[in-house]
Length: 514
Image 1 (cartoon, rainbow, N blue to C red):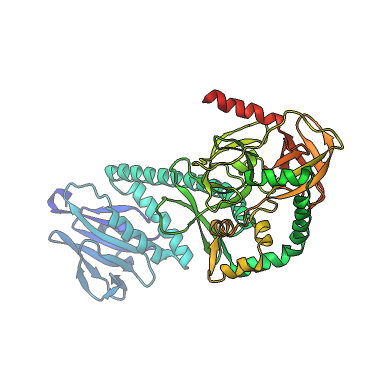
Image 2 (tube, rainbow, N blue to C red):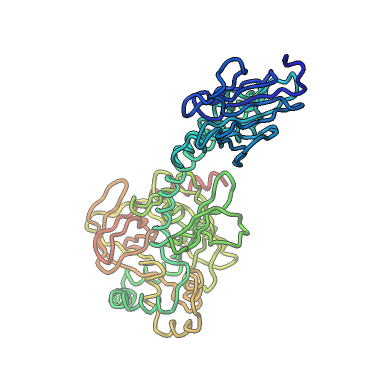
C-alpha cells in the first residue's frame, strides 16, 4: 500500500548486526521479520521469502504496526518476552531471538525526514553497546563510536551545524585553558624560584619576633667575643691621644640605621604576603588591609653618619637599597616584583627616639647613598669629609655598629634582659626601641693600618673589631677619609672603604637640585 495512505511514517532502525545504523521505512501493510544468520535480520514484504524462516510478522494497525510472533520463536519487546501479539509504540526495542539481533521501531510525522534527535541517538547508542559489547571497556568504546557516528550522520543538518559550533567552542575553550595552564605553570615555576629566594632571605635575616630565650641564647653565643671587643674599644676611648678624641667627638654623629622592605605586585600594587603552613610557606599578594597572612618584611640594618647640619647622612647604597649590590648568595630573585621600603629610621647615640628617614639620592656607580632626617632643632655635629686618600701604612679608625642588632644585644648587660623579661616576644623594631631607651645605641671602634690603595677602594686591617657597613673611616687627624663598604666575617681581617672624595660628587648633585 502506498506510504501516503499511512498517517505516520513508521521506521525500523537496526541497532545491532551488520546493518547497525541503517533505517528502513515501513510503507506496506505487512512485513516479515526473517532471521539472516546469527546476528542479522531482514524485514521484507511477504512475497520475498518462504514462510518457515519468518520469526514474526508486522501488520499495519491503524497509525502503527502490530507484531505477531510465530509459534516457537522468541521475541522480546523492551526486555519483556512477547508470546503472541503486541501493538508497537514509537521507541519500542525488539530483540529477535535469545541474544539475537536488535531493532527499534519508531514513528515520525508523515512527510518528515526520519532523523534522530539527540535523545534518540543517545538511546540507540546505549542499546547498541549493550547488545554487542562483551566487556565494560568494549561497551564504552562501542557507545562512543556509535554515538559520534549518529550525531554526525543521523541527525538533522541544523543539529549538526549547531553541534559543530558547540564542538568548536569546546575545543577553543580547551585550547585556551591549556595555554593558560601552560603560562600559569611557567609563571608558577618562575614564581617558586623567586619566592624560594625570598623565603631563604626571610629566614636568614631573622624572624620578626624575638623572645627572651632568643636574646639569652644570642648573648651566650656572642658574649665572649663581644666582651673582648668592647674591652679593647673602651681602652681606645680612654686614651687621651687622637684616637680617644676622635671617638668622643664622632660617637654622637654615627647613626644606627634600621629598616624593613617588602615586595609589591607592579600590576595591582598589592603587597606580597605569606602564611606558614604545615607544608611550607605559602606566598600570595593581597590588599594592604588584608586580614589573612603576614606582609613579607625583610629586616636590615647598617651604619650612617651625619655630613650636614641639614640632616644629611652618608651611608652605603646597599644599606639604603638593601636589595641591590648584595652577594649572589644573599640576593633573592625578585624578577616580576618591585621592592619597596616599608620603614626606615635612624638612631643617634644618646637620643631615645629615632628619626624617620628617607632616601634622598644614591650613586648607581659607587656604593654610596645620602639619607635625609629632620633634626627638629636638635644640635648634631656633622663629620668632616676629606678629599685626600691616606697613604699605605697610615693608621685609620673605623666606627660603626658591628653585627647590627645582634651586636648591641650581646653588649647589653643582664639588667636589659631583666627589664624585658615580662615581654613574651618583641619585634625587631621594639627591641631596638628598648635598646635606645636604655642607652645601648652606641657605635664601636677599631683601629687598623692601610695596606692597599686604589681610586675605588682603601684596604685596611682592623684587628680590634670591624665597623658596620656605611660607617666612617677616620684618619688620625679626625677627618673622614672613607666609607666602610665591605667587611669580612667575624672580627679582624681586611676591610674595604670607599674614598670619601667620591661622596663630594653625590653631595654636590643634591646642592644643585636644591
